[in-house]
Amino acid sequence: MLITDIKRVIEQVSREKGINKEVLISTLKEAIESAARKKLGARADIEVHYDEKSGEVEVFQFKEVVSVVEDPEVELTMEDGLKYDPECEEGDSLGIKVDTSLFGRIAAQSAKQVIIQKMKEAERNAVYDNFINKKGDIINGIVQRIDRGNIIVNLGQAEAVLPSKEQMPRENYKRGDRIRAYVLDVLEESRGSQIVLSRTHPEFLVKLFAAEVPEVAESIVTIQGAAREPGVRSKVAVTSSDSDVDPVGACVGMKGNRVQSIVQELKGEKIDIIQWNPDIAKFVCNALAPAEISKVIIDEYNRTMEIIVPDEFLSIAIGKNGQNVRLACKLTGWHLDVMSKDEYSRKEKQRHDSLMKIPGMTESLADALYQNGFASLKDVALGDITSICSASELSEQDAVILKKRAGEMLHLSKSFSRITGGVHNNGEVSSKSVDSEYEESEVDNQTNNEAVDNISSDNDNRFKHAEDVGTERFLQDSSKTEQL
Image 1 (cartoon, rainbow, N blue to C red):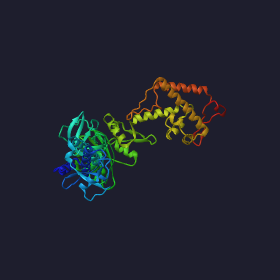
Image 2: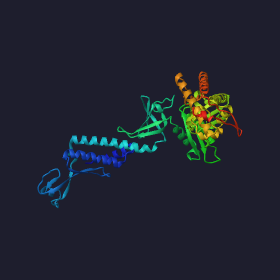
Image 3: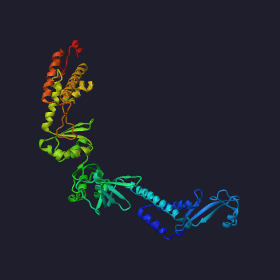
Image 4: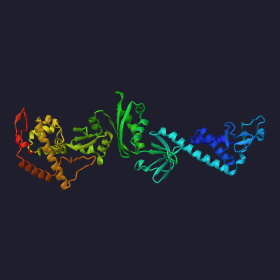
């Protein structure tokens, strides 16, 4: 079987589809073998040979020489064997060349179907193998069509999809437009490999900086993180391994030419480039720039921070619709609660006042506890006895009583809140963070104060003041301790 252009077809398909020639040749041989079996029998011993130089395909059927033929598909007589090989002997296996023109139309159609199926599988595998290593890179393509809001992009050897959720707002593309996107994922599916693109992913911004800024590509400047609100604003944290290289200046470029190229690619998205710092408090202050920060209170256990700013910088720190602080939260990985100095003072007073609700509490003891981290009823009620003793210089027995009374008041406060159906603010980012465990309305204050008076009048236990090493100590009548 000589197909004059088979070699050219194999080379062309291999080049255009990115399929290895050996895979195509193997597919061709398998298809011809399938066609031969339909003509010669399912149990026939068949071999197909392809000559890459000439493009000739040869089919051989192997049969064993026997004295008595029991299975014509795999055996032949000595008399017939001598026709093919005069020197054959009984037990030899003879390869008989088959005329492929005898296969017929049905066999040829079967071969065609096998070739098409194998070609699709080989093409799908080739696409996956070629693009799986490009996952996480930027790729260029041409818009081929738009299907239900998704943009189908021609990448040359394959098609990719840019889902509507991965498209930037207010971006419009039409057929034939060039597009640049981030390879988000490469999926191997039954119907074919699917390449998923994105223009909203934060790593797209990082890769754009790597392409535009030589210092980033050479790892002199490192991008520690990026946060985006696609098409609106983004923040990028950078640091330098060379003390002589300013990471922010390197990313901005001369007269801002480097960052402007990225801004144009992102259709005007505003980019804040900030200096990364290993000190999380300084890093957060940089992330909230240009707002001035007066004070930072860190809660490492809950990864939260209270950011206190002058009143005139509150709107700048929060940003339009909370945008600035929201991006800072994403960039740093911490929950940030921004408030003005006046608001912070009011909050401190409320927390301090909550300590004063504990029966027998004194101003000096409340100040000592507050300064040592016990800023609310909850802190005291759930606090460690040793820590309370250390903060207030109370005896262990007095600290136990103090903790118990704080727990009673906290329970009373929560119970009253449930009865009245109090609503707390659980917003992730807010300029006014309301601590639902500590703060109560004026009605709550009045009711709780009355409850405290009732508890105090029912219990004859009283804390008495005495000077002890310059601090306030609680004394208690041991005979009345059991009532608690």
